[in-house]
Image 1 (cartoon, each protein chain N blue to C red):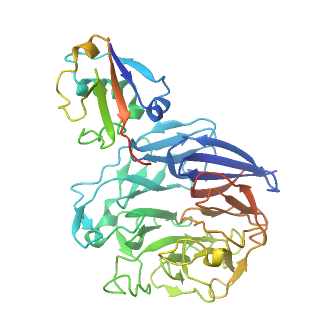
Image 2 (cartoon, chains in turn yellow, orange; image 1 turned 45 degrees about the vertical axis):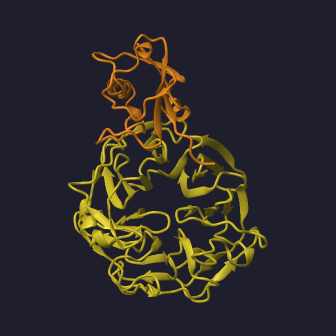
Image 3 (cartoon, rainbow over the protein chains, first blue to last red; image 1 turned 90 degrees about the vertical axis):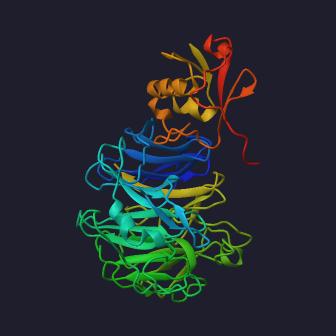
Length: 371
Length: 98
């Protein structure tokens, strides 16, 4: 019987949650890297025993961790992230130019076919790749040629926080940066273009239709339809049916279209999930009710999923990398909160249960079915 | 041998005890100790000083013989008591946070 593994990065370490395919009883192991920020942990699709983790600390900097045995043991690998050439400057919060400085790794995306190849999205925003299991890292610096001098940090920093590798076209890569926008490469990461047409930034940017500067909170894609993207922007939920060349809003009847994560159902490409948050200045669910919203129509028509979730006095946030789905039938959906709960649904969101309730603030959640 | 005391997160990362001994060839300076430390424990590269500029990370401090060496030149000789192994070189994460 298949097992499910949920990798949880928190403000004070990593945790590994495992269950059989029923997903009604969970084992919790950890903390790994206790006391340290673990921004992201992700397993290789090609070899589920290979895990990569980003460990970061204001004191001790960035450490990259790798496991070759499914998380039982870990070893530090390379942590030298050197920008190509002279990194130059980007826009600072006040509009002045500010030097590009490496701070941490936000997101890791292992190759679907090679366990030794993994991509890392970093702050200050850039994309790196390792072809040797994380021992060495090379920047794909063509990304920063897309008006990098105009990118600016969001409140969380100028982070490259999402990487999507097209499973049908190894040369196509999507990434998202807060607050620069979404970008696509069609040649394996050498040349990039901004994919921001149709995004609206009224009140956020001097030019609301600027090519870069948009505060993209997350993007997602169903592997069967790599040209269809969904986006949770600072405000607005959007979709694109042409690989990001044009976006249109699908916020529809959401109670608020501010939020961070967005996920797509493993088997239904038109079923998507968001967690609406009250506003950019109040990062918690509206009315103190924690509700996941599901659209079965690819957006616009949304239903609140509340069964098993707190419906009063709930003031947690769900961060951009803290929601994930598994590929079992029915699809499992998971998300973690800044209050330290990890909720799971074994029925595509119809009902939820807390898998674990008192972890440190959850930064990332990654579900994977393992043999 | 130089006796070095590491902060908790770093001795855990290096899979060693809180205190380790480092052999330095040539003049015993802070730079030389850190070079030897990183050569023996490569996982510590980048955790104490920038990998490319070799500058001390902002929240890392160095103490020995009751003195704060953090702002001294890393090429200054370490105190004799440290060189002779009679006192420790303490690497400390600066007090920060609440």
